[in-house]
Length: 403
Image (tube, rainbow, N blue to C red; front, top):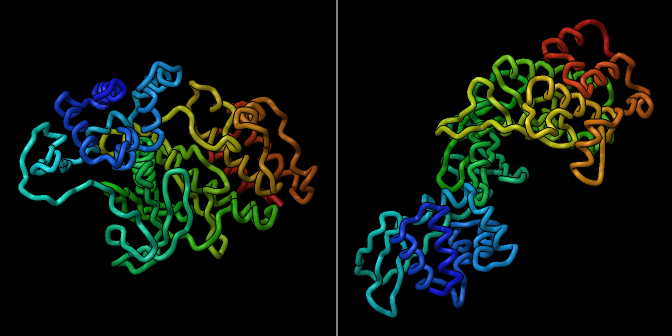
């Protein structure tokens, strides 16, 4: 082996927990089956064992440049720590035309196999419309996000349309994305409310974990805003009432959403609002999901709707931070533009922390003074100056007309 490969294997051994025998077998597998002069990081990426980011980090350890030092510092990542469990059980290699030998990477043992069939481990084809994911027939692609795709599918026994959120393979490589999806299923399974998207199933598929959700046959609030520019106060109040009820139920169950925003509010064709995407939710009474992975995080959410106190590194989300996010969501709906916009996320966070909230009625005079006052209270910089619970907001909204 040349020196750079030695370094790479050494760091894989340290960060992925591979034994000497396993790194030796891995090197032999790469040498025997690589394409032309393919380097080790590219080989591991082609075999779907490392993401492109992980492969780039591994390349960085092969020299003494600042990039190399930075890459070494970043190698203590979940992707590398879990590499050993993603390695194939066996990898067939050929040695100068001799009898193919099957190298058992996980067991660190060599065995002889009297067959010339060549096996290269690959992930199965990704889910596609017209195919099956588990027992579900995928009938339509609905969209994608940072970690996965959402499909419309047919439930095989209930014979109803469902939504399936499935992780992309590269997202499965990071424990965080898998935990978020599992957390979402865990959270939704605990909640039963007409204004919260229901969960039907969760499947920890080896390659494509997915959650099966209620299919909502309408647009998101974000799409409604994009199409119409702004939401009329009568519709906004109806949506807000439903979301307040949903979030009150969630908080009574010990759930903090942490990512309330227009894109996470789904609307049925009859105008019913349903709160969705609890992948960032925090369970106050259950900080772990099945399998022991910790779902809690200090800061999460979308900066355009993030409470000022969550910009700090030591602040925890609570019911009042969800109240701020709902206030920012309804402000956006009524005005047709986000509360604050800036050149960078950090600038937007700074504006949430210190900038004065512009009056709604200056640009949307159809908004009643009482409704504006409620939203301004929800957007108070200090959590202590906001309504302290969604139950309190329910009482305030039940006391008289908001129009």
